[in-house]
Image (cartoon, rainbow, N blue to C red):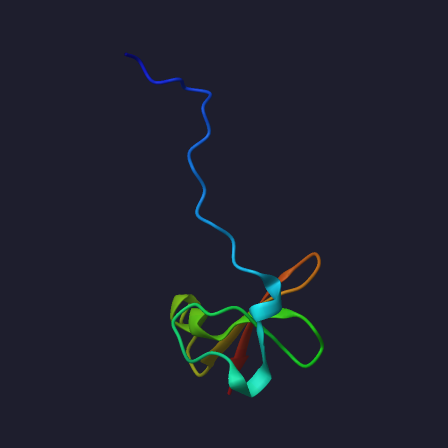
Length: 74
C-alpha cells in the first residue's frame, strides 16, 4: 500500500510553557529553553552552535518577537 504524501507526520508531544526556568536556574542541560530577566526566551546551551568570531566568546541565543539574537562577550 502506498504512503499518503499529504499525511502529516506525528509530532512529538509539546512541553508546557509553565516549566520554563528563569535566569540562573536554567541552562544546565544541552538545549533547555529558559526565560531571561526581561521575559524573552533564551537557549544558553545553543552557544556551541553560534558562529566562532575571533576575539569573542559565544554566550547565548535569544528569541525576541521578530528577531533572533546571538550574544557574545569580549
